[in-house]
Image (cartoon, rainbow, N blue to C red; front, side, top):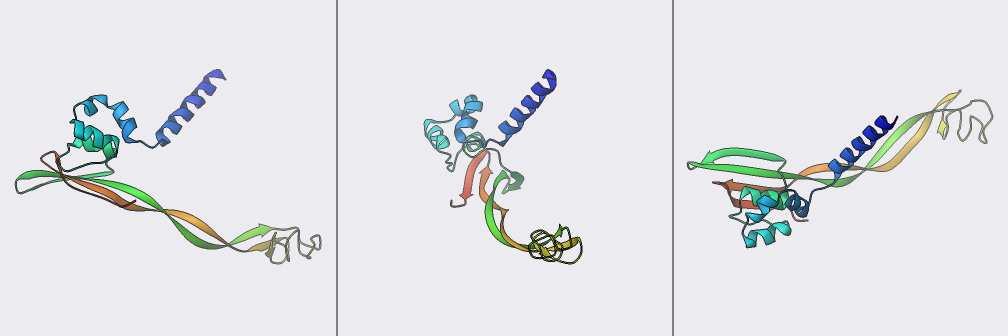
Length: 166
């Protein structure tokens, strides 16, 4: 019993720690050796989550985190690399559905067909003990992915970058 409780507690702690969003400060605390190798100017930018042209990959990692996608190639005889960061925007949608419900049939409800229903379904219409529920309307939230930012590297240094406005 005690072992299973400890396992459950450990698994829960691991799950919750993986859900915590990472910040520049958290990445700096986990990677102090990378942070101390940066110039004073880049250390200041990294703590603010900002990048600039000429920064190293390590500085961008500390400022923005690990990229969601990485592509590599060559251009004009030089190595190029692009990091892509993805985000998700909430989008509200309207939905409509029809449910299937169970009722008691007969005349036991206030309106005849079943409790809370007309003809057999709870809050719905139909005959007999089974009935179709009424139509339902509501809002939903979907999360739509988008490109939150890209960073281009040439010879290991930032050559260009873009970020979505917040």
